[in-house]
Image (cartoon, rainbow over the protein chains, first blue to last red):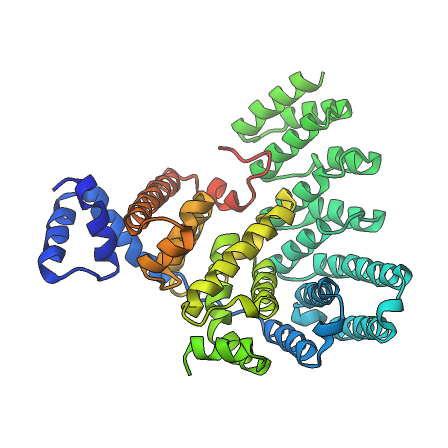
Amino acid sequence: MKCEEIEELLADYLRGNLNSERAVLVEEHIAQCRRCGQEVELWNKLALLPVEQPSPSLRTRFQAMLESYQEGRWENADLALERKKFAGLGELVGWMRTPSLSAAWACVLLVAAFLSGRYVDRGADTNAQQLAALREELRSTRQLMALSLLQQQSASERLQGVSFTTRLPEPDPQVLDALLHTLRFDNSVDVRLAALDALSRYGERPEVSRGLVESLEGQQSPLVQVALIDVLVELRDSSAVAPLKRLQQAPNLDPTVRKHADWGIQRLS
Amino acid sequence: MSDEELMSQVRSGVGELLGVLFERYQVPLFNFYLKLTGNRAASEDLVQEVFFRILKYRQTYRTDTPFRAWMYQIARNARVDHLRRQRPETSWEPEMSPATVPADKAQEAQETALLHRALRRMPEDKREVLVLSRFQDLKYEEIARLLGCEVGTVKTRVHRALAELREIYNQLQSGKALGRSNVEGAGAWPGPGSLQ
């Protein structure tokens, strides 16, 4: 039997839908055909991927939603508004998931609950001002969270911090500073790469492009060096030429990086 | 009580019974989204959105429809809407690596990481059909209804998705064997500078 002929049977075989007679057909085929055999193997291996558990906050949010429905708020309120409220709450909960920040989390939730509570009380009369205040509150909270996360011990928390900064509509200088610091001094390559990725969005800001050029010096990982050269070339920052030339002269430089630096210098000069 | 009975009750106004359905399906739905998006926060938001929509559109539920099929239809729509709203640069976040694997099972951890990475590199539609059939325990007939195609097509697509997974998996594995594991390790960040 050829692979094409076995296609449908194989899918059924994987799910145990075949009677023994047809299962034997498939087994004979996969004993001879390495590709199909490997596919069956991979299918079985997929069982290794663990079943992940959502955080408890998911249930809390669900219950909040259900309560609001049962209290009849859905009948007279604008449903879209109700949904946004839960989404907002959910975002907050999601951001504050880090245990080390639970105290900050509690405060923030309190503020959010207070603000949204006031918002609900006033009902339809509520004006955009309050909503704007809530948004502003949320924005500065995110900023705070990002900054604290960037200083955590575990690399995954710092990564999370970097990814928070990308959700900020307009990160302020303090956040950009923290990202630049991360790019230069974080000891995890992943975190440095993530910081670079986040910073590359704000490359047109002079303080960022200056920081990027400066960070070229002292980078040890070829991955980060190459990524950094790419970003600098993309930003057409000719002030990067001198540091690139210095990098090129560095002893023990990875040959790929040297080549890439060459290319960068050519593009920028 | 069956899912369908529960949902009929919810439809006729007994909202609290949705809680039972939530307990039954929050974990499967969360894992469905997590395998599609790789992002825990977004996956939780999407699960919440599904139950919001179930409640909002409760009147459109027909008692003769299997609840699961209806729910996954809503789940897929929610995902499509989410993708539309999402900015492309936030689509992959670094948290999907299996951090929960115990360190002493190094071999297994490596396999899992490789599988994760291979899955992530698959095109979305192929990944979806694989996730639906392998992890969501949906029958091919149910998937066919969900995707609006023939059962035979689903089977073919499962096989092709698996073939593609095999290709990617092998590529990743041979890349590792050549000592490129460092480069691959940064695969979660296909930034402008990856060395591939």
